[in-house]
Structure formats: structure tokens, C-alpha cells
Length: 335
Image (cartoon, rainbow, N blue to C red):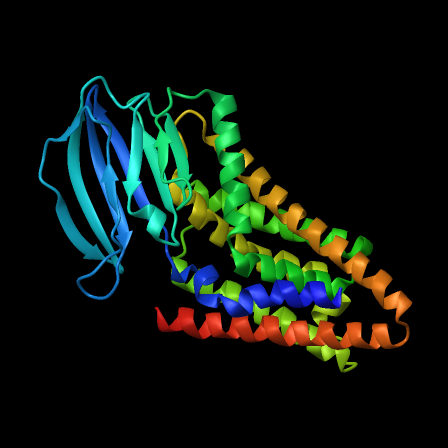
């Protein structure tokens, strides 16, 4: 467990900027406004006052610009808008992001058709193109939003560090099951309310509060090792239930970028939530497996192994709390 925890924490310590959304994704939106006409929105992370990442949209060969691009710098991103005309529509065509392979960022692409159906795709440096599919039914939407939910949680190291801290303070077992269940229920509530437009909180305070929740649980771990059991150690499910409400708003931020397809809102929302939970349990399964392996190793080295395991658990709590505190300061400064 000792080495496994150090590996997990080292990932956060070695690249806090990357996983804390320092490398922001680009965003491409294609909204069909006629049989052959699309409004294009292209947002690229800015680099300073006048620079941006060298990413450009290559539409299929049959497309041409029907209007000149209008560019503006908004919230640290360069935004371009124009209208494209594509003979026969985009179905079956390939859209490529030039320059993506040379970066470390992703692109979230969203296509909205005249009938309200959508196609959402995440492009990466290793896969910078996608083929525009024919309108999908409920099954296709379920698959797309499940994958989107899994990708969102597994790429959000702040959410995963919170779950890791809960694992460390509960020591697994039924306590962990009840804690994770409470976390699931609470963040599902705010995720649904925010996605449906009933609740709106600006992203910066939400992101800062998520980081602060990690600091709180990490501090509780340290206090527990000093013999001072706090609320999280005595009733971790209450803490998970409370902070889960804020984490749900963070999950809703990822869903808002993709949007909810007209006519399939319940399906998309349900399967995005299922994807998030799938990602959670995949992460928990990996961590618990590594802890079980660590316990076996510690048993062979007893009593030195157990003492070392406790020391590294404490070191992990300090590392998690330090990274999270850095995020708190960074995100407050961005208000």
C-alpha cells in the first residue's frame, strides 16, 4: 500500500497544473441552421494577451466559409465564430483538428443537428479527427454519455484525490461503502439540478470549494494519526454527503460543455451519471487492490512493514493536502 499510495500522490504532485485544468481543453461547436449550413464556434486556450494554441479546424472537403471569422478574447480563451456551408451536410465527413497532435490538450467537439440530436466527441493528440455520424438513437446517446462521464471523472484528479482521502480515512469495509454511497447520492442531486438549469453557481467558487474539501479531509487524516478523531473519522458519510453537493456542481461543468440532446435529456443525464460512478468505482477498485497488495507485503515485513505503512499513509495525507491547498490558492487568485 505504501508504494502504491506514493505513486498515486506523486502523479498529483508532479503535475498539479496539468490535472487542475491548467492545460484547458479546446471546444468546437457545430450548430446546424440549415440543410447545408452550420454555425461554427471554436474556442482555443489563450497564451497571454494575444497568443493562443496553434490549433485550427479542418472541415470536410465539401465545406466552405459562408462568412468571415469573428474573433475575440473571452475568459482567457480565443473565441472564433463563422458560418460554414457544406454541400450535402456533414454526415459521413471527417473533421480534423490541425496541430492537436503536437499539444498536450484535448478538444471537446459537439455537433447539434436540425432535429435537436447531438454528437459529442473528445479528440486527443493521438486521435485528432472524428467522423460525423448519422443521427443517433437512444442507444448511441447512452453509449456516448457513459464514456463522457467516465472520461470526465478519470481526468479530474481533484475529484479522485477527494475519493482517495476518503479511502485513507475509512480504511475500507462497510464504512467506505456507506461513505461512497452518500457521496454518490449527494453529487447526483446537484449534478441533475445544475444540468437541468435549476441551480447555477459560477465555476471558480465551485472549483475552489472542491479543492478546500480535499484539504479538510487530508487535515482530518493527520489529526486522526495524532489521536484526535474529527468529524470525518467518526462519521465520514456526513462529510461525503455535504461535500458531494459541491462536487456534483463540478461534474455538471463537464456536462454543460457537452450539452444535453433535445428529446433525450433523461437518457443523457442518467448515463453521464452512470459513467461518473463507473469511473469512481474503477478508481476505488484499483486503490483497494493496491492496498491489499501492500498489506500482504507489510505482513511479511512485520512489525517494520506496518510502521512504514502508517508513516507513508501520513505522508500521503500531507502530500494530498499540500497539492489541494495549492489549488485553493490558485483558484481563488483566478476569481
